Length: 123
Image (cartoon, rainbow, N blue to C red; front, side, top):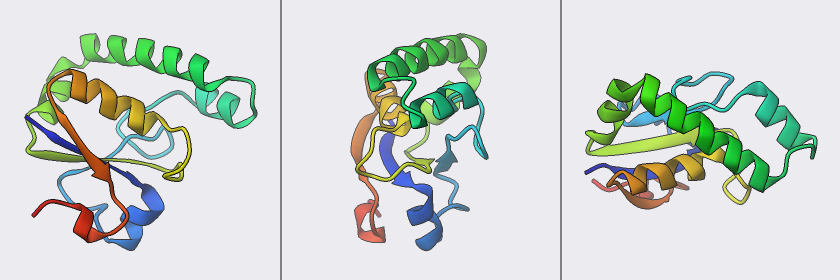
């Protein structure tokens, strides 16, 4: 089953892994909409209008719907050897990439680590 890594997009650019076949941009701005939150969620959270708990509930609800509508894409990600989930949020912040990683773990994947340097990736 898939090994799951997470990374801040700025780090992914610095490490030159954004073109890696394992890399999956999960942002509403530039990523795969199958796994992205909405702009309303992102901006509401940034403005303090949506709590971490509210965001989590809303994102989980969105992803359950996404799985029903886009199960082939979810299956594709789950069948990968490794996936690197990218988002703009800093590593020390609340972020949907960690929520998505938790969901993929519940589907049988294993969470490995947040990538800070290339040594964090398995060979």
